[in-house]
Every structure is written in C-alpha cells, then in structure tokens.
Image (cartoon, rainbow, N blue to C red; front, side):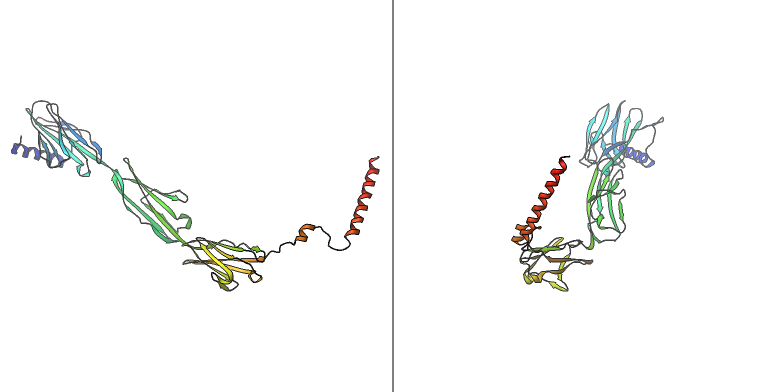
Length: 350
C-alpha cells in the first residue's frame, strides 16, 4: 500500500485542492471526478465520522487533512491517537476522529484511485465551541458618584452574545454588551452583577460584586420619657458604607462608655445609649453623631421626665373633688336629679 511515488502525487494533488479552495459544486472531467459533500458541524469534544464512498475497482484510497495523510488504506499515517479506521471495503472508507477540538477544523479530502481514473471527495469540518468567560472584571469598591465600567469577555464559536444583569437588589436588566458602563453610580446600584455569555451551544455565567461607599445618613432622633429611677434607652440608627462609628454627646460634652452609669452599645447600623437608673441630672438634650471616611451626620434627642400618678389619684379618678365641700355638693346634685325626674313624669302624662 505504501507506494512512495503514488502517495507523493496523491498528497500533492490534495494540497493543491485545499490551497485552491474547496469547489462548491461537483465537478468532473476526463481525468478526475472531484466531489463536495455537505459541511460537517460538530461540537467540541464530540466524535466525527468521515465517510468516503468507494465503488468501482479501487486500487488505492486515502484520507488527508490539509497537508497530512491520516490513513492510506488500512495503514495509519497519523500519529494522533484520536484518529482511527472504522470501515474499509468496496462500499465505503470511513475513519473517525474522537474528542474533536478547534485544531481539527478545516478541509478533509478522500482520494481514491480506481481502475479508470482518480477521484476526490472533499468535506469541511466546522467545530462549535461552547462559550467560556475568560476575562471578567474583579469585584470593586468605589465611592458614590464614581463612573464604573465592567468588562466580560468570552471565547466560543459561534461568537457569544452577552447580557449584564443586576441580581441584587433590583434584578433589572442592565446591558446587552460585553462592557457595562454605570455613570455616576449610586448606592442603589451596588450589589451583585451577573454576566451571561451565550451561543447556540451553551451558556456560561459569572458574577462580580460592586460595593459603593457613601457618607452616613442618620434617622431622626426620637425623644424618650423616663420615670425617675427607671431604665431609659436612646437609639441612634445610621445608614452608611463603610459602617459608621458613633459618638454620643450631652450638650457639648462627649459621653464615653461607662460614664456616669451610662452604657454605649454599637451593633452594625445601630448605637444605643442606656441609662440604668435615671437621675434628675440625666434629663436634657443629647446628640448622636455617625462618622465614616466620607462624612458625618447627626441627630438630637431629649430625655425628659415622666411623673407617675399617686395611689390616691388613681383611686379617686380624674373627676374627684379634693376639698371639704364635697358632702354638700353631693346633696345639691341629688336634689337636682329628683327635680328632673318630677318634670319628666309630668310631661309623660300628655
């Protein structure tokens, strides 16, 4: 089978056909028959079969890839272990290529020498590759008002298309391009962004996190009334990124934890100033200040006294009379009631 002169001529003919481009229609002349099969489209990693019809009396046959001979009859010329012979008889000559990759894409030629004339059959293998995101922006931390651009690049065949989406908090569609531009970003646009690369084969998804820093914003303080000797708590809440540090003041004097029986407890966005045993000196005006590297914000509180009612007041009720004329007043009320009943009975007679 390995006639050196024959294979040199055969390889030269195949190279010439490949370099000239595959014909788009079947051709024939007195010397050769050149035929084109449909393109074969296969996904990366799959197995492709290359079938070549024989017919007539075949003396020599071979499968070639570009400038290389894959098989010459039963003899394997390719050193690629993925290439193997499937069928060789008078009806067909079939080889297979396993685990195909982009390097396998291109033209292939089956060259046959019959008793009458040489014949070639050509086919083009197209490899489809699922998208893979190969370049994605890293998570970033920016200040509110900054301009932000995220990048998502992917390989694949056919060429992937892209979709950017803000997953949290709003989940709205952000862009349909490999670049996502966010001018003057606000705190509402912070969160997890998802890039999706998709083609006809598959989808690849990756995410990137954007953290937006902004100055504290403090909720309006709520005044608190406390009875003398009881426990009282002032609460200060601040929205900020990064989280704010809190400072408490009584008028212009800063309060520290443990100062005069007061405790300061900070937990995330909330700071509490607790009075365990309120005294007369504790009543007054207080200020909470929330601070981070971008700024500060404050709010004010009033801790005021609540007077508990006495036991005698609770028993007598709000309409009770407290002086010594209460007995005579009761007599007048009884007389007035009797008079009203007499008038009512008189009117009912008519």
